[in-house]
Length: 152
Image (cartoon, rainbow, N blue to C red; front, side):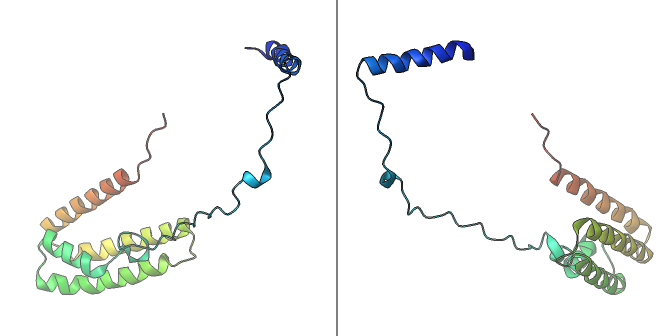
């Protein structure tokens, strides 16, 4: 209905109720409103998990995964361990609390690219191919995980 039709209808309703002697409903007393309602506590702050934040790069876990997937020899493991530990320390430093996410992302990307070069030096031909597959799987998984849902 349009506004022009509603105004006379409302006025007529008020006039009829006055003529009929009906009183308007009494306002709700102020005491009826609950005053002692417990506020909802704020949610607990999110803590970094092993899958996120500075702890996301775990050198020991990464070396174990690489050993299983790439079938690293003990000599290769010994060569890669300091590379991964150095990378872990640098990533944690780049993701320190208070660092802007964009700056942190760029730093971590450069650190991981440097680590990739140092890792590839240690690997042989078939291991390099498998390493590329691992990187592609991780890249695809990360894109799927954070892909935004289409708007309706």
